Amino acid sequence: MREDQKYYTVRGYQLLRKNKKLLTSGMEDYLEMIYRNSIEAGYMRVNKLAEQLNVQPSSATKMVQKLAGLGLIKYQKYGIIELTERGLDMGNFLLNRHKTLEKFLRFIGCIDVLSETELIEHSINIDTLKNIDSLNRFIEKNPSIQKKFEKFKEELNYGAI
Ligand code: CO
Image 1 (cartoon, rainbow, N blue to C red):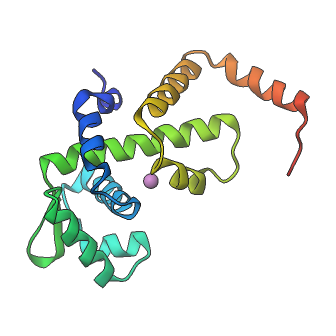
Image 2: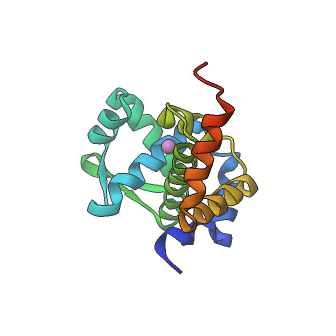
């Protein structure tokens, strides 16, 4: 299976369900950001995390301690954060969920793609996400669909709101 197809495995789904009651939207954002940064370096620093999420280092530290309490990251000395195996699986899922939605919103022609993605990603369920992912893959395999859709939209002429 290709790397980008892995996240809709049974494990990703189970982890999402299991953690749904435990993780707030804010915690999901933290975990996603830690994962983004850990892909290459294998770890992330609390100060950098605070900077990237635009929060105070003290708030970042608090959140990091909560994630550590849930067994999703290891946080020890010198402000270094490392993901546990579960944290890695969850982070991978969260990042791919973000990418799936971002791709879809770009396809349909959203203007404010990033803030829309941030709003939708925390409340979407797995079934909807899977179907959107299927649609993304379908469009990628059939690029002419995108042009047809754009032309169709022009004809509808909703215009700017
Ligand atoms: Co996100």
